[in-house]
Image 1 (cartoon, one colour):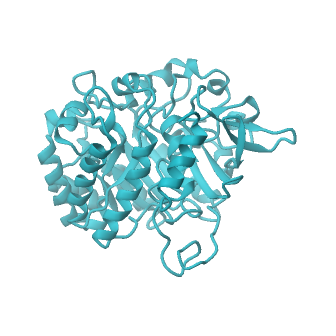
Image 2 (spheres, rainbow, N blue to C red):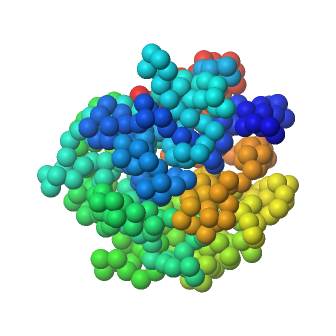
Amino acid sequence: MSSRTALVEDLMERFPQVPREAVFKEDLLRGGVAFDKSALSDNEDGDVKPKSYFIFSFDHGTLPELGEAALRRPPEEIILTGGPYDLRRTVVSVRVNPASPYRVAADEEGVLGLYLDGRRIADVGVPPMPEYYRHTLSNGKSVMEVAPTIQWGYLIYLTVFRVCQYFGAKEECQYCDINHNWRQHKAAGRPYTGVKDVEEVLEALEIIDRYDTQKVSTAYTLTGGAITSKVAGRDEADFYGHYAKAIEERFPGRWIGKVVAQALPKPDVQRFKDYGVQIYHPNFEVWDRRLFELYCPGKERYIGRDEWHKRILDSAEIFGARNVIPNFVAGVEMAEPFGFTTVDEAIASTTEGLRFFMSHGITPRFTTWCPEPTTPLGKANPQGAPLEYHIRLLQAYRQTMDDFGLSSPPGYGPPGPGRAVFSVSSFMDSLPAPAGEPGSADGSTEVPAPA
């Protein structure tokens, strides 16, 4: 294609059943967006909610390579509306790429817009600074550092262990920059707590609960790096679980509790349930056996692909299939030098995995791969996977859900274009809104995402 605009329009024409909003969203997530100085935030001193770097960098450059965007953070997310494609309200996680053909900039009147190939294609909304971000903990730490919110305020993201014990080239997942992200923030002198104290987490949640008077925050996720030995004297289930126990005792029923952890044995998974966790995310990362072994060497060494999948199925006996939602990293299937060389092959492989889990009532979800440059796969594949792969995945994902009679998973906010708030892939934007609800296929009008 002669331009990115031509590529996007060609895909919208070829796949009309995929919402046009999702086509742009996937392209922004896989390839990033540049920010004019007029579109950057004033960090925690301004009126725009800044990017929190809540677990990975999700950028196409290291902090020193981002220029002004490393000093004045871009917004956490942006919302796209209107423009020549008449886009419905679409929440997109920000992934900075100074070389992207997409750019966010203010016009002569100071109104932000998204520009592609030099043409304004959408109006851009930015998240307002939430009141709870304006208050600090008693020790001076910011709420954004301890308990940042994403998905337009829907989800509190608690990365309580900021590094991973799968360490080094022979153990780290080949697409993951969690350890580098920790190092770069520490090198830049930014506050970036390695292991978050339970009392600090509770204090941050108290501030959120006090000032989030509209109850926009609906769920929390407990997550962090894999634990192969112990952290603070606790194994993985007990380490992440004891945060959930403390949260549920202090704020019973206030939020939907979710945990992202390895695929653990049933007794450990039962502990999560006993601690009050409602949704379990034992991420399977990539379906293909050979690619799992190559791209997730630590997980293959310590647990193994077959045992990982068995544990995912076993966990459904404890949480119920609907509440087991493993993530995969969409796009790494096509990463050179080992990945599939055609979109057809990649989609066939990933669909095989979707059908395996969905046939058991388990609904995976996915994050759109951002090729971070400090990772082996990011270095070798700076362009990521083809946009066509991502669009066809959305089509295959929805079709597989329909084949097994499944609906959108819990804990992700409303589904449907113009309604979804999940920001790191378009799977929720591409699913139908429930019949009779605003934005559904019966012709009802859409509703905005929470402000």
